[in-house]
Structures are given as structure tokens and as C-alpha cells.
Length: 250
Ligand code: SF4
Image 1 (cartoon, protein in one colour):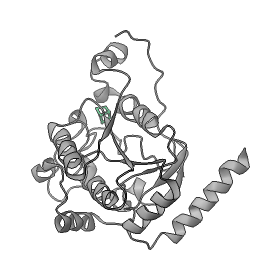
Image 2 (cartoon, rainbow, N blue to C red):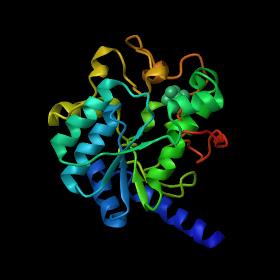
Image 3 (tube, rainbow, N blue to C red):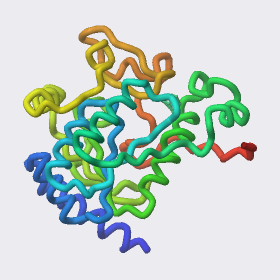
Image 4 (spheres, rainbow, N blue to C red):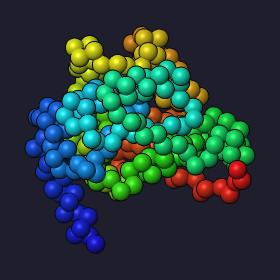
């Protein structure tokens, strides 16, 4: 069992080193050749990197599944961008929701879980649906970048994602925020209109606030908590434990 896990990890590390100087498009072509069918692209419709990744992938291979996690708490602007992108690129976005409705979550865990234990809330509304989205897939594409936060500073181009049990490819890992926005402008890529209203990083309505010019772009997320990640991109492949599923009725 050890061999079947360790050997692929070493091969992935070697592939990541080889792709370190490659363009995002070259990385995407490599990923499509290596893993499609079986490749999924995560796009939250809430960040510019995801839109760049989507635009690049749609120019290379439109058969890759595009999915998003619908927490039930997304901004109207995020749904609007989802629909705009789907129409522009001609794909059917696959939305994955929590097994619990917001009312069921409140019944099982109390009101406003996000304000008391955001790790538990993210585990229920983001991590578990993401696990279902990736079930049966061979690799997934993420738009995370090294310049986004300290916890993402060591992001490799290719890695084994132990948390979800498949390969994770980060084609934009080496890109900067300004490169992302330049690509958006050059290619007229649609983006979330909240970016023009002081929201550099957009997640759920309960946990996203606008930030002042010059502030850390992710400082508007989970304000008041020592939390910077939703649990999908934990660097070591581990994160807050997912709470046990409560027995709740419809
Ligand atoms: S971002 Fe906030 S509301 Fe959304 S799943 Fe996480 S804790 Fe819950």
C-alpha cells in the first residue's frame, strides 16, 4: 500500500518541478493529456484567478467538468457570474451543495454556526460537497496562487491532494495578482462585479466583507477569526475535522 501512495507522489513532485517554468496554458494542456477524462476544474465564480483558469481551460478543452460549491450563502453577483460564464463558454456548471439545508444545519448545530465555529460550517457546506464533487475524478484544477497568503506560498504546480485523494494541479501558482488582472483585461474575461465594490476575495455572504484599499485582499474573509482558509486548500492536506453528520429530518 505504501508503494502505491509514495511512488506517485514522487512522480508528481518531479512533474511539478518540470512544470515550474511552464505557462499556465502549458500546465493545463499537460493536465488534460494526463488526466482527462477524469479532470475537474473548481471555479467559485468569486475570485479572478478562477475566471482566468476557466477562460484558459475552455480555450484548450471544453470537455473538462467545471464545478462549484454552492454553500446556499453565495452572493447574487456570484450566481450572476456563473450564468454569464456558462453562456459565454457553453458549459453546464455542476453545483454541489451541502447535505444539510441552512435550516437543517441550524436545527442540528444551532443558529449562525459560521459566527461561532466557521471551521465546522465550512466543513459541512464546502469540504464535504467538494469531496462529492471530486469522487471518481483523477485530478482537479485549482486557481490558488502563491502570492495570495502565507499558507499558499509553497503551493506546487502539481501535488497529491491527500485530503481528497486525487491529484491537484495549480496552473496559476506562480502568477501574481497583477498578471491575473492583466489577463482578464486583455481577454475580456467576465469577473465578479463585487470586485469593483471593494471585495477582492469573495466567498459566502456571512463571511465576506469589503476591505480598504491597500489591505490584505483576504482580510475581508472570516473577520474576527484566526482563519484564512475554508478547508479546501489546506497545504498539508489536512484541516479542521469535519463534524459528524447529525441525524436531522427533512
Ligand atoms: S464561508 Fe462562512 S458561511 Fe460559508 S461555509 Fe464557511 S463558515 Fe459557513
